[in-house]
Image 1: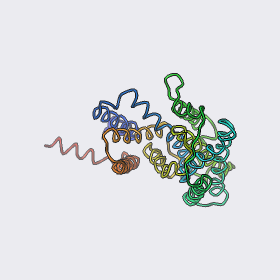
Image 2 (image 1 turned 90 degrees about the vertical axis):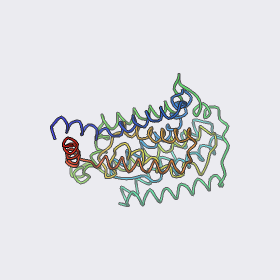
Image 3 (image 1 turned 30 degrees about the vertical axis):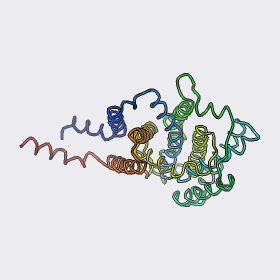
Image 4 (image 1 turned 90 degrees about the horizontal axis):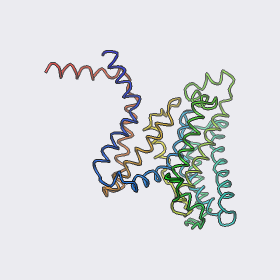
Length: 327
């Protein structure tokens, strides 16, 4: 295989998420006349805004070699906390209190992982169950109606031509992009996932950075919960059930390694949009939701397979090319 072909194949492998997004977007555009309408694109962006924010937090955890199964429950706690607090405190104090509660939940997950040496899967699974129970108890198992004009503006308003939730997700993306690419904590987070022992030997307190990413994941899940709640103005204890699976899927589709140390926030964003586009076009085609789950699962399998491909594994391309030429 020539050097030029290797470079080309390497490019396609490294940018498989973006290529998959372009293919899916083009197919969606041709399959429905409604897809490219301003109204549908705006709805699509609103729908993926909360998932984007939560997936960014999930990426931070995954970069350290961890996983956070509690984000869906944290979103539910955020929704209920905001609804209960908003009745007496108003929007901004309620938002602060909500994010503070979610920060504590994330810190506790990080404490179990970093200080108690619990497996991330077990620690966050426990928090997932605890959080869902707390949300159901606090709301007495019933949705809570919220009447707040600022919340309505958050869910349905615009900043210029940009929906407010999309603007919030974009600001979050920019801040985390800067953190991961241009700050020491961001580089250390990636280094911890790549080789935790080596980072420890340099004298860096790895446990602090593990607690940091779980704390940030909790806060971002709280933001996602408020953004989702703003679309319906209802605090729901059953909000975001299985949402953690979509967040993990977006991160994996974006090319991040669940072993840690590998992942790009831009690719995670594309992973989110891929999932949103698939759901959107299937809704436009009136395809049942359970079929959407099958398609999402297949895309995850393909994404993980593409991640594992190395140039040395692509010898079969050369063989196929020879066979075609000989015929």
